Image (cartoon, rainbow, N blue to C red; front, side, top):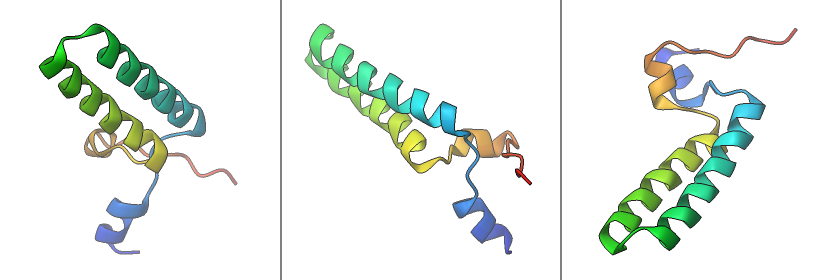
Length: 74
């Protein structure tokens, strides 16, 4: 497998963390849109959505830069 293919398709988040990231993202969007004033609420909601996308995809670029990988279950 080439390095480029491994970088784009290798999941580096376990299942429990993916669920937690999506839940925190949904809560973050709701809280930011309800409690913060308009320009800040959109900024916070968009960053929470980015966090949720990493959970949905199972790949976090920051974790990949740090060298985090999932163990293979055999």
